[in-house]
Image (cartoon, rainbow, N blue to C red):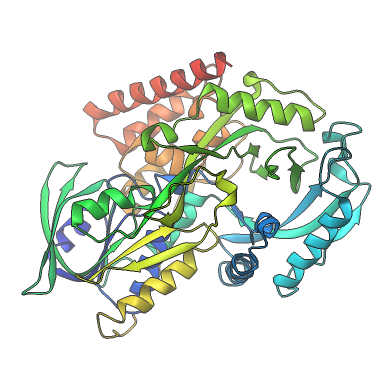
Amino acid sequence: MNRYQALAAADQTFDVAIVGAGINGAAAYRELCRLGYRVLLVDRGDFASGTSQASGMLIWGGLLYLRNLDVRTVWGLCKARDRLVREEPGNVETLRFRYLPLQRGGRSRRLVQAALFSYWMLGRRRRRRPYGECHFRAADLLARGRFHSSLVYEEACLSDSDSRCVLSWILAQGGDGNVALNHCELTQAAWQRDQRLWRMELTDRHGASQRSVQARVLVNAAGVWAERVGELCGLEQRYRHVLSKGVYLAFPRPAELDEALAFEMEQHGDSQTFTPWGPVALWGPTESVVKDIGGGFRPDVEDVRFLLSHANSNLSEQRGAEHVVSLRCGIRPLAVERSFSREVYPLDLSRRHIVARDPKVAALSIYGGKLTSAPMIGREVARQVRGYLPARVPVAREQAAAAAIAYSFPGVDVALPEAGWCRENEACLTLEDYLRRRTNIAQWVPRLGLGRGDENLPEITKIAARIHAPEQAAKALANWRQEADDQDRLLASV
């Protein structure tokens, strides 16, 4: 179903309308569609264009939460991780982690060993048993004399990217009364008590058209924007989010790096990771409370300096801003009670999720959650929707395979879906949609895919022409080059 067909199909009464097409919204959409409900999914941006495009791609069981003895959270996240490994072979794969205890100033090695063993047990011994190792391939990447011998355990990671995972969950459910619309904003919503229906006004931000739709149940899955959507819809809000900014730097991937390295930090009991991802390796993340959502999605000079400082303390090869291929920046929504007012380090807050039911209207709101727990959230949403609506007859669906061709981007050796095909089949409406979320070009190639000296400009010009109308392609390309220039100025200021 292309976008024009999807817009036409929105003229119906849906069982459920989901606002927010990030990882939680996609998980709820997938689960409800599988149960046979007619579902509308809308997002004012692209699919997975918020926090869900800026994760570290790790599917982990919450090892760090053992420091607060949050055993319940670790137990649940380990279960969720292993289920994803088992049920999502195309999206999730096992990844070996190498934990590197500091020789001085860090945790006791024996304490770490005990924690890893407990972690393995909480994971029902489904991953490989932790073990110690002195000699390993990536040892030459480490600063000399800084670490004890390593401790190895298993987690999981996404095979491609977080945004691709979200997209796969959404696209697999198309048709049969289900509609997913990106770049489509909810502007009004009102609960009609006499008819027990939500009446909503949508604005297609791509074509500037207006749509009126109806749904029996509303699900607020807007992530960090959940409070704003709740206010717009007049929902009861017993919970809110503390916002934690997370930034990663992408460096060229060292040849020796075929596993994730986890480094102890000397403050807050935190750690940072160096994780392989295609031709790059991600270093990070930061963990800092932010008040402004807009600013939270933009890395600043202090973020980059902080990450470079820790990278250069832990790695043998010194890296500067000139070595950064790209930056990833997102906001973690941490669920707390509405009255919560303490100043805390974000890692001290639980990564729990809450699916809150409004007592006055047919609506659910999702707070918190993680990439690992998203399928759990989807199943919980479906369970609560069954309290409003009778079960439907599930419908089997098949997703067409992509016709992929290879554009020529140095360092990117995977087949890339053709841009025009993505426009017609994956609702790829902008140049950014393609370069940042339908592919990883903007993250794997310097200057958002343009290259250090804009050597890839001809290829990206061709891509823009396949996605945009002729009068819009030049503007989209100019805006993209401006964003690359802004990133260059940020890095030059470090």
